Amino acid sequence: MKSTPLENKAFLLLLIIVSVAFVWILLPYYGAVFWGAILAILFAPMQRWFLRRFNQRRNLAALSSLGVCLLLVILPITLITLSLIQEGSALYERINSGQLNFGEYFQHMWDSLPNSFKSVLHRFDITDPESIRQRLTEGAAQGSQVMAGRVLSFGQGTFQFFISFGIMLYLLFFLLRDGQELVAIIRKAIPLSEIHKRSLLRKFTAVIRATVKGNIIVAVIQGTLGGFILGVLGVEGAVLWGVVMAFLSLLPAIGAGLIWGPVAIYFLATGALWQGIVLILFGVVVIGLVDNILRPILVGKDTKLPDYVVLISTLGGMAMFGLNGFVIGPLVAALFMSVWDLFSHREDM
Figure 1 (cartoon, helix red, strand yellow):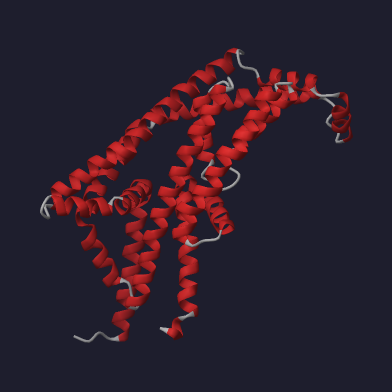
Figure 2 (cartoon, rainbow, N blue to C red; figure 1 turned 90 degrees about the vertical axis):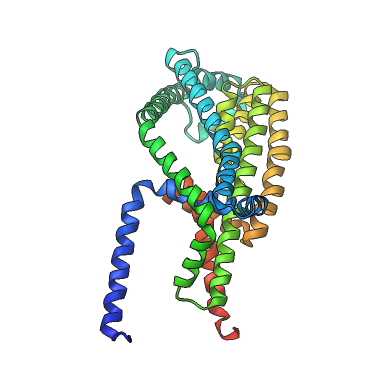
C-alpha cells in the first residue's frame, strides 16, 4: 500500500521519537555499549578467522574471540588499574604523613638556583618562594585527598562497575556473533546511496581500528618507557607516573612531556645534572620518537587526517566525553571530512 505524505511524516516523527527514547535509555551505560561496539569492530577479523576454523559455528567462534579479548585487553587493563590504585594509595599515605613533601622539593630547587636566575624571577614578581612552597604543599595535600576520594568512590561504585562490565561482555558476545547481520540491517536502513554507505562505513571502521589500536599501542609504549626511566633515576612512584604518562600520551605531541619535563627541570635545578640530561635525552629521543614515528604510521596513515586535526579533535573529544573522547573525537573529525568530501564530489558519482 502506498502511504500518504501525512503518514510518511507521522511515521518519520515516530521513528525519531522512539530512537531518541532508546538512546536516552542506554545513556546510563553508554560507556559499556560504546566499548562493546568498539571491541567488536576490532576483533571482527579474528571472529571471521574462528568461524572458518570452527566450520561456521558462530557461538563457539564468538566465545573464542571473547576469550582472546579478555586475555589480551581486559585482563591487562584490570591488573594495571589495581596496581595504580595500590601505588596511588601508598603515595597518598606518604604525602599525608609528611614523608613526601613537594614544598620541600621546591625549596631545595630554589636554594640551588643561581642568583642571576633568581634576579630574573624577581623581575616577574616571583619574589616569595615561601608562599609558593606553601601553595605547593597545600596543593599536594588537596590532590592527595582528591586521589583518595577517587579510590573510595571507585570502591563504592564497584557494583555499578561490574554491572557495566557484564553488559559490555554480554553485548560484545552478540555483536561478535551477529555482527555481519547487524551491519547489513544498518546499511539497508541508512537512506543513502550504496556508494556513500560503502565509503562512510569503510571510513568509520578504519578510523576506529586505527585510533584505538594506534593510540593504545603508543600509550602503552610511552608509559612503559617513561615509568622505566623514572624508576631507574629513583623517582618516587614510577609505576604511577608511568600510567599517568600513558594516559597523557593519548594527547599527541604534548602528552608524556607534561610529566618527564618538570622532573627533568627539577633535576637540573637541584644540581642532579646527569639525571636531568639523561631524562631529557631519553624523553626527546626515545619517548618522543615513539610519538613522532609510530603515531603517524598507526593512526594518521589509516585515518588520513592531518596531525593538527588529530590533536584538536582528540583534545575536544576528551573535553566533551572524557577518556572515551580519544576515539569519538577523531572519529567525528574523520566522518566530517569524509562527508564533506563526498558532498563536494557528488556530481562526479
